[in-house]
Image (cartoon, rainbow, N blue to C red):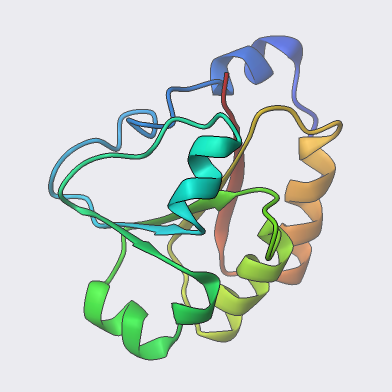
Length: 132
């Protein structure tokens, strides 16, 4: 199956990361992986809400996922310590089958990264969100 994102779809995928494109409902448990200072320095808006928990990639383990039961996991597509492929594989190895969204300003070919992760982590619901 080929996945190609048109310009219109790419524009539609742009979002205010702070609200996660409609995921701002307070009943949503969001696990944000990464360094909050790095989110700010990279120009991303900080995800906000009482149902968001920030953790380092090192803290992501089976116990954490069982305790928090996140509805969605978000992270930068690229950070100083890891990239979205690293985290996707870690989540898949921990049998997480929920949504994982990686955020980026612009990737040259987000569809290619999405295809690679979907092939490596077939049970993970993965997508890249392009932020302004």
